[in-house]
Length: 398
Image 1 (cartoon, rainbow, N blue to C red):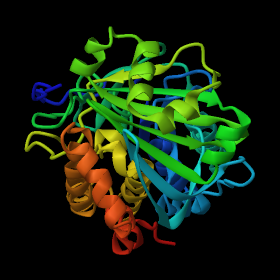
Image 2: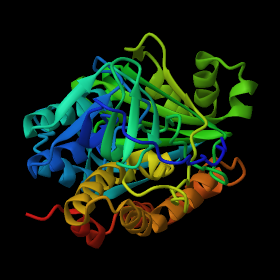
Image 3: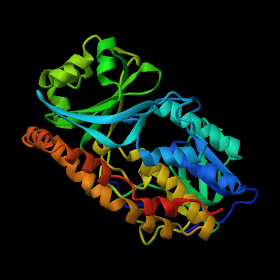
Image 4: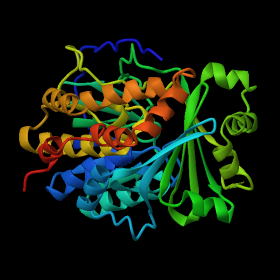
């Protein structure tokens, strides 16, 4: 999905009686909520707007790397209390070929529904104002900052705007994603596995390569397994655009996955889906884009799911945006330059692996290579993480 370059019109004047917020955050996922927590703890007035009125699930692999865990601990989120699963190894499969290795860190599994609600609570307890159920319709630059127009209530202005709407764009703030890989459809559902299959999966994230895409399966909280997969549009059309036939297609090509799904019961009435994901995208601010607009999470960068560091990058962007704002004010260009530098290398490598993982002729060769050299899986897991120096830069000053 390639978006048109947004036209930045002449900044508008402030309407008499229009209220002014210092910082407004659009989106209550990990990126937006983490920024709200940190700004509120620093004594800054911050308004966070989440379009959903109720807790809800999102399409996500729900894999928390060690970097994501560190950020969450700094925000006061207790993963043990939330029941997060523990993941210490990875298995990758294609047809009947299986390769495995220990991860270079202990990962955790937690549903986005539970995680997002915990982060929103943390933001509220830190002093941020949370408004839910009033979606933002559009944004636009003004001489004082940004005007925010919502579906309910009067428009208002914000001196700084943090855009954390995930893969969804707002009118007046669309990303330019030309060149990104965006022909994939993402699906996610939660399953209750048969007891023997749950025992076999415990402590492991399994990745299944199939012609046209790949799937990930791991345990999350409450004894549930998260099945999240990416499939090309052509492949999905080839199986009749049906979820049941897609699962049958994947199981026919992977006996281990067929075994996992045998006797499994779906918790959700239907899988969640998302289209046109711009994998490999990293935001580059336009010369015409005003200062004071901070893009967070998937508005900033979208790393391929294969390497499982999307939530760490989202949290990193929230920490970085808050840190830059507290140190330098509305210098959003500085923020975007720094975070691009932090994530560019790992997203490039993840994109190469993503392409290899979905190429039918290359998939069996990739798994056989991992069988011969299991350490390669550990190396990839380590090389597609945020670097310690980047994390240190993101820590908010005392």
